[in-house]
Length: 279
Image (tube, rainbow, N blue to C red; front, side, top):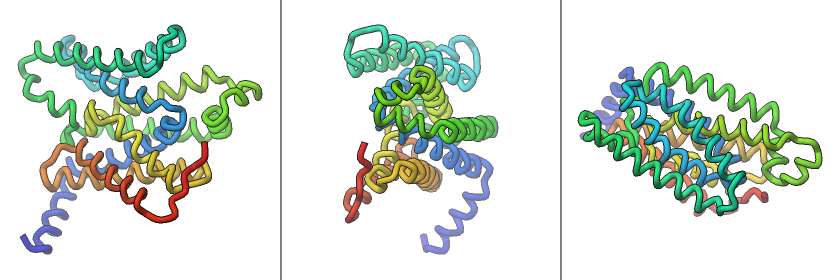
């Protein structure tokens, strides 16, 4: 194909409703992923998002077996599951990584077993694991837009408390910050963000979607406010490019987005004068 033919095809592709929904969904979820991810990695919750993503398959499976739309079951399940894991982390003396490993591995195993009882979904597990660009619907865009506003509002209104809680929790407690309430609210928003992003990103790759832009942004910034903005921007940019690559070459959307994120991260590492944020 000539360059002109490729450009024509890309333009025609951008006019299709599914592609417009995918690009808009990529922008919204990418902004949310970068925004929440900026705090996630500094609070060492990266493995938590991974466990939540794997566990989401169990919620999808339960919804299918009960005859409900998995999209409506997944979000409340993600919130309840995140709160349950938080409770166990606070009540047990087990190491965090060990408990989360048990949680996400067993949830993934049970979820796949439950899916095997639904014949019509046995061939579609790949879409759940690696994302599907065609799965993004108008209702998902509306919810993503509202959730992005809620996440941005929460971070914006409590920015000083969030930064203090992230960088120095004992000082945050000494200054009267409601650590438990702040942490719980953040985890609930993180779980909702993971739940709404799984359709396009997939269960297995959602953690990378949250973590990689934030890690790249950390190497590019020294001020915390710049770090948050760069992380959100990289998340949106990589999601849009990944969605475009996915549609143009007929590839799974999740791996396409994460590959773009990895490319950006490697470019940042190789670029001169990158400055890491000091936690």
